[in-house]
Length: 482
Image (tube, rainbow, N blue to C red):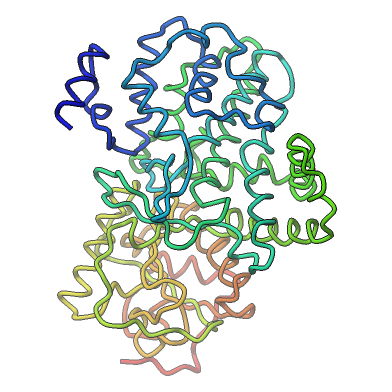
């Protein structure tokens, strides 16, 4: 390895520490750093020429891409050598998406918000937007290239499986500080969570570029990516942040694409792919429309209606001690808590992950529980964090644990409230997700922790707030567990 690094240093002249290893870090910051190096080395290269060169480096010249975007060398500068040997190798590995026989997903990166994103569909969306801006035309191909093709092919390839198994899965990184290997949690579909995240991001960033004012010119690619992925909330209410940033990808992409007839768009994309690839015989399959209809209903439920949930492996959970006890679903109750300690909201993935690990240590080591007690924990960074999860008995509401999910907001809400956006993650999204997914009964009852146990939880302010929520139930007839 030392010899290889030295050779790259000699060939390239200079070598960024992140890029000097064949097994480079796979996070968004490293990718943005590489893009900046490419921009600094080619100051006359336009953003559109750069993304086309990136596409060419990764070999993404399939018929659908060529149909909407043309060949990657059809703009000036792209026929010349833009990347040195080191950058070429980095981008080739960073963008080229595939899953290995060992279940490792390549061409994906870990972002600052704790989610995993495939680079290829994100860059395709940006290229569509830049092309539309340059030519003054509509952003044709945005949905087909970023999402529709992957979704449609995934639905069809798994027609014999339940709709929920035709999308995903997510996975786990080997290391959150120095990520190098991302391993999927089960056999992959053709639309993994990372591909869907990248597709949503590509649609958002591409539409932002396509709709720039006539007098406004696109910034550097690195600046576009930094603005979206390298945000710092620092106590801001995510709901009032006007700029488009990655923690809001679900709500923004739904606002952009939700008005489309997405089922029809997926069907049209499939027919176009079959025509371009001369495989029209597949289009005669009478099960295509049903597969797409069922698949898009699952897509909307999973990625737009449900809130983004950070899995246990992503926040660094310690193993469950013993064997978890399964819940009998659907459950009739939802119990609201605040953590009290930590007593302050967390506004970033790193902060919230630290809070989750601290709570788990306290619950396991000080209280002697098998795991963190809550089913789910709500951060103020735009994400919900998985505790015991949907299927396993928690330790959150004494005497009532088998009958409901315990959901805790990080912070002390005795005299103040979580942000409106944070509250809506539970009130508008988690509850609906649970009902639609068959985990909560449609007529479920919501309680504050204090209604069932002698405690001040979830704090006076938060308890007063949830009393106005739909499904809130009084407990005068219930005996508290002392």
